[in-house]
Amino acid sequence: MNEVPELKELLRNLVADGDFGLTLRTGETTVIYTAQGPKRLATVLPTHEDITAFLRQLTGSRGVREFRSNGVTRFMVPFDGGVRLVGAARLEKHDIHVEIRRMAGGER
Image (tube, rainbow, N blue to C red; front, side, top):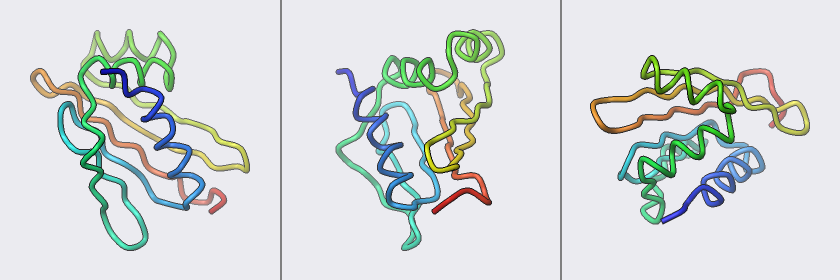
């Protein structure tokens, strides 16, 4: 399963909808944080490979190397309109946990 385009679309929607962030975990439902509270997306169950490919697109090969070497990486994703997202990924046993949040002070 290749959900990387779907994960990229989630980020675009997050910014467009003014949501606050998202949580990705290997094999678990994705959680979007909205003004109305957390929303689970049962259709998005990313694999280890999906999240690694997504991280490569967000952080580049350097970020993926850091993640593989240290089990953790941090990153910033700029969007049009001055919106910036900050994120972190960490390896927990054999699962990947990614948190991405809208940076305070960005456009809504």
